[in-house]
Length: 467
Image (cartoon, rainbow, N blue to C red; front, side, top):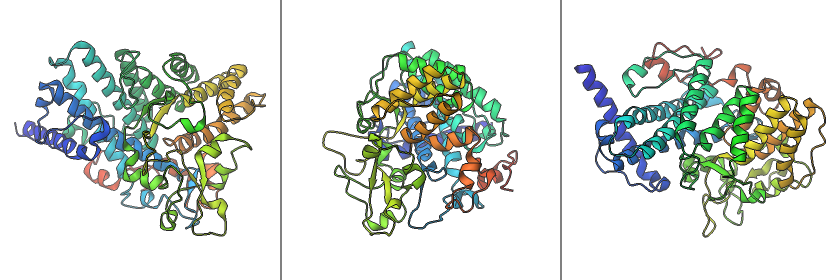
């Protein structure tokens, strides 16, 4: 009885936390939260309370996924030009690994919230069957995404498929293979449950092409090329998404290229750190801001071909302090209006978009030696960028051309470059060669388990290199 009371109390605290954080992000789904706390059981007494709790799951998921944009300085995309050989990994790699706890914490809070919905929705009588399936598909998608980014970040991690936080608190690490199997199982469930069309609002997980697109990304990580191709192909052929006309069109809300976006989280404090404060006229950030925001590495700058429209649309020079080397003062302007929106237009962090599906299908085809099909997909992206068709003719050259195109097209997006370096086994060779990665070690392709989590759960074992 005492244990049940403890579980009930912890669940209530989690729900209260959900209610407490949402007002700052209330615009996210435009669903007001109640002013008083609610219990786990009362979530399923009305559609309104289910919506409210689903909203809290979205918020913690956007918090988790927004931290993925901080991976740019971990890769070779971005660095601090003022401090020179700055090591962005210091807080993550030094005991007590306090910075590394953010992704861990947000991941597992997201999982608890998704699990509570998955447990309670099947018996909820206050929603019709179509609505129930959509809600379940949403929760399965979020649970899959949370597990995916936990395993990508930490390697072996505990699998959490229950809202029982007491049991979860002592769970051991499962193998990466087991975690990926859970991710794929959840995505398959979501794809089966969600309809082919939704509300037409990219902030909602309400159609099957969102988990399909995420599964294409997962299968790419796993080098399962037939499955990656099939998933990306289904999204491309769905007819629900179209590439923006120009690179500058991509990140505006309502653009048909966006498959799923992170709500209004572009205004978060983390986004303010990651992206320079610029308005519709691209006013440069202040000198003090230049001292810590992330500039494009020279390596990334040099990856753009002459005449690439993406460099014009997405990169700008800011050297208000007149530093001696202006090449170190280029910043990303993909998200150029989060501090000062253009009248009548809004932007948000894009989590999944159609261009990535073309590049996934291109790589999957190239890996399977379908070179003509791969080149055709690659050229779709190059054409929009104002570039000529690829000249790559061999399988190796074509794969390298696709990876290079991913680096440019998807720069500063959802840890894509970091993931590409890790999954292709090139992270150590690439990053150890950079003079500004002064403290890089090969084991850092995985983050450390936060020290606080190790103390709370004696079943956890630390990643190699961090003992």
